Length: 365
Image (cartoon, rainbow, N blue to C red; front, side, top):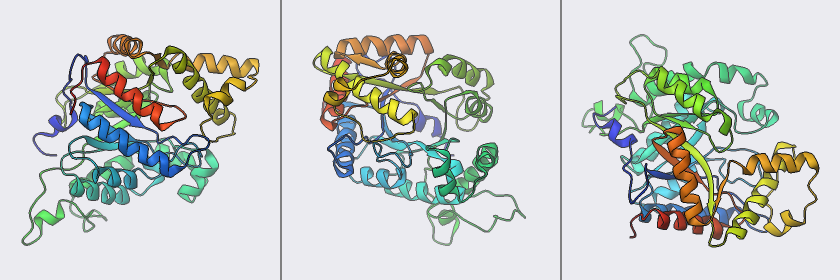
């Protein structure tokens, strides 16, 4: 890693935000909308985020979910690299067990060549889908092997990124290209960057591993809120300084939606919650419109889930969302907040990021 690796990880808070603010885009597809529209909205959000001082924009790998158009993070990030200039772009994350480490090293080496010094490689150990789809992705039904082998896969991926397999290793003559080997070839010029690796998690496994390796850590508070504080404590307690970081750096993913009207925020998060009800009960689909959610006859069990889910979604007016984000940051001590806005329409999501930027006094372009 370059000497300024930590600078590529840490952000600088803007305006009155207590910590840097970033974006996690699930590239959601609403009922009556298309994937093309969702991806175009992603470009609009990335441009807005860049203009308003958000630190980074990540997309997450999901599969076999009609309402999520982010099955190929590297492809989306390449597209975004062509439409932005400064904002950091990354995966939140790529699910390492679904891919050969060499393939990921090649993909993100290519992205780094496209957008030097602003690419993050966030890695997860979950499949990002159901078991049957994971088996189709991995061409095996032995799914536990991928998760159990995660530390070994991670070590292999990092060696491909750094091009530093030891002498005699079976992969010693294999190089991820674009990558460091081009700088050591006759006439080559070494790139000063390589994508920093982040570990993602929703429990203690990746928290401990990230701490032990001295890597930055991203926790999925937006769907595992009860584990946030214990996981961050475990990460900090396990942390060992490395060539990457001298001290821990943890961001948390936060589900937050700001609207001009508090009632509209409640309508939008109800629709997003209905989408989660369907996903959790094996009926994944497009994100329903608020009108559909309002007319839906929730069972007592579904209603209990909705109430529990929405208790961890910060929503309301811009000032209400700002207060909720500030309180969450104080409670967790997170070094960065990565906001994901789940709603039926792309215009609502775009407006939410704009309102939050306004509430914190983030700079305007």
